[in-house]
Amino acid sequence: MRFADKYALQVSVASTGLDSSGRSAGNGTIYINLCEMKKMAVNINDHESKTNKSITTQTGNTFKEIYKEVYIHLLFL
Image 1: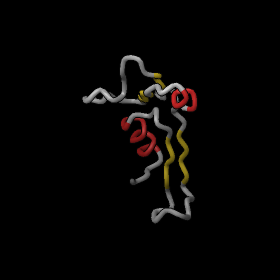
Image 2: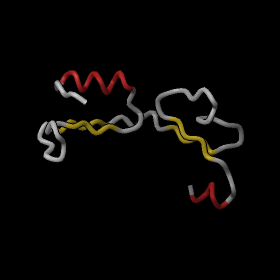
Image 3: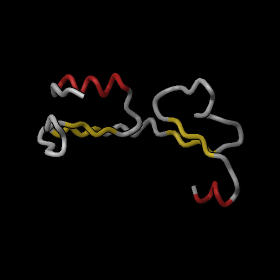
């Protein structure tokens, strides 16, 4: 980001989906692809949550992958 700022370059960021307006890609931009960021952490003793359960996920996970993890742990979002 500092490099892009220094040289007045636009940055495109993509993770798991498509952006119909084309904001996740562009010619002449620095392209950052976050699709490999797939860590997930399930907490069944989350005292800050009303249900005592939570899931934290990185941006590369699809909703299908997240819901699968939710189902495995019987979490309700």
